[in-house]
Length: 138
Image (cartoon, rainbow, N blue to C red; front, side, top):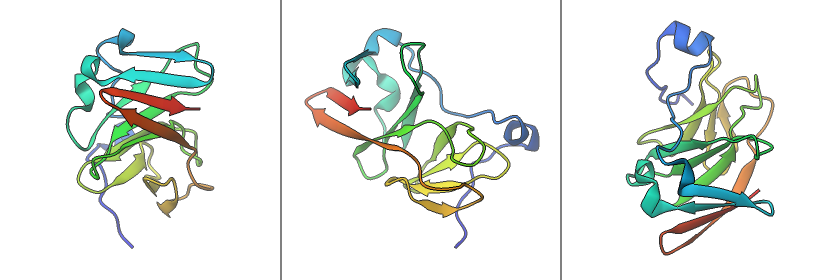
């Protein structure tokens, strides 16, 4: 099975430069007791299906990739590929997540590997959605 690849040049893939940005408002999320609370009203980056943000902080043990999926649901992943520990990006219009490295390992929203050299599935976190708030259980 061949999957769509994100459009990046060789050097972006070689150095693992991901496309997904951090939220513009760092106060749009907070962590407490193993959960990340996200205020969608303060995170316009997640307005459209296929969009995503990187949630990173010294208070988080591992970075999180939060995706507003093409399926309309929100999905959260440990933002580390199981191949080379590089960051991940969603591939718009495909309901997949892809490693930003040369290997381009590609995964379904359930974390399962579709294609590439990754050594296993992604860590997927539970996301609860109520009103304009998300809770990611780490």
